[in-house]
Structure formats: structure tokens, C-alpha cells
Length: 294
Figure 1 (tube, rainbow, N blue to C red):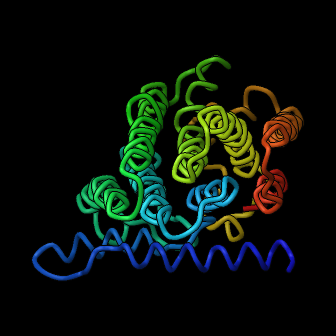
Figure 2: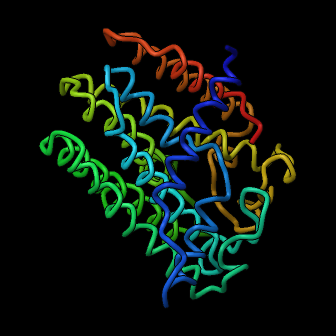
């Protein structure tokens, strides 16, 4: 089976997992559920649940214990996208090839549905307590909360917003990238390892892999914002320029950005090499991020 076939097979499994966890569109709050489901069923790479699943497999995990967390991490990621698209932030009208949530459901429902997805992520993750070792599930929940909160994704987002349109140092930009993007790639790799019972040193190794991949992924996103095609990306290009955002490309130039993506990816591969187990698909998935066009 080719990598593309394996990738599609895994995405199909993830899509089924996500849909099984979505809230029912019924009752007085059915409009909120509809807005949540609209954003959750918009497609995308599903990279974070895929990382979690592959880390779980890498350390010998089996069964469905990882699935509530796979759904939860994608809900948290989607919450961040819904809010990122709002007029108060990036004011984007296109995401994953269709209108953004606030354009379809209104700004107020965009805010509420993003909030609801963040809360529902934890409701979903709590289901894992009935499926496996409570100690491992508790550790996994602690990682999810830490990496998505003030010391992680939301902290990075806040610094990004506070410095919008201002000159940024390389150090501050790195902080934003490490937290806003990197922490929510570290989390699924760590959680997959934790749920599979991996020792602490291997969980920390997966955190390192996630940090490297997260930085490479964000820089590649900067590159695509100036070199990509809106139809292929499913979102506007030159969005960073429109919003006067400082990026790795604006600080260092396009060629240095491309070289840095390659360097970071090589380091991520090296970090995987020291592990006693290997997952060829995970390695190929990380490698594919370097050359992605969307």
C-alpha cells in the first residue's frame, strides 16, 4: 500500500471517529451544535488526531482508548481556527475551501461555537476514563490542558494578538510559533505515548519531535501564504501581508525559511531514530509536511 493510500485510510478512520463524537443537533441549542458541527466537518489534514493515533501505535497501543483524545485534540484545534477567523482577529472569510463559521452563522455564534468546542473537547476526552487505566487518562488530560491553555496554544495566540502589526524580534516570533502552533502538535504525540504506557523518557522524546515538527509546520505555512494558491490551500493567500503580520519569511526571507523547514524536519527524524520502536508511516507523514502545498 502506498503512503497516499495509507494516509487516506487513516483519515477515513479519523473522520468516522470525529463524527461519532459530535453533538446532536437537537433541542433549543441545536443552532450551536450545528455551528460546531459545521466547523468540525469541514475536512482538513486531521494531522493532530493522526499524530496521536500513530504515537499510540508506535508504543504498542491497541483498541479504542486513544479515540476520545483524537476527537478532543481536533476539537481544540478547530476551536482555535474558528476564533482565529473572527473579525476581531484575522477576519478571514474562507477556511478549508468554504465559508468560515462566523460568515455562515454570524459573529456571535462564531464566538460561542468556538467556546463550545473547547469545552466539548474535555467532555469527550473524559469518556476515556471508562475505557482504560484512569492514571494514564489523567496524565493525558493534564498534558492536553497544559498544551492548549495559557502556557500553550492560547498563550501563544494572546501574544500574537497583543503584538499584531508591531515589529517582532526573532525571539518573540519563536515564542508565538512554539506555543500557538507547536504545543498542540506536541500534545497528541505525548498523549498517544502516555495512553500506550510508554516510559517518561519516551514521552519527552515525543514532545521534542512535536516541538520540531510544529516549528517546521508553521514556517511552511508562512511560505505557502506567499507562494501558494488559494484554490489549492482552501483559504486566502497573502493573509499575513493583509494583516501586517511579521512571519519567519518576512524576517529571514523565503530561501532561509525553506532551509529552516528542512533542518527542523531532519532534527525531528533524528529524535525519532533514538526510540526503540519505529513507525514508518509516522516518519513519512512528517517528511510529507516539508513539501506540502496545502
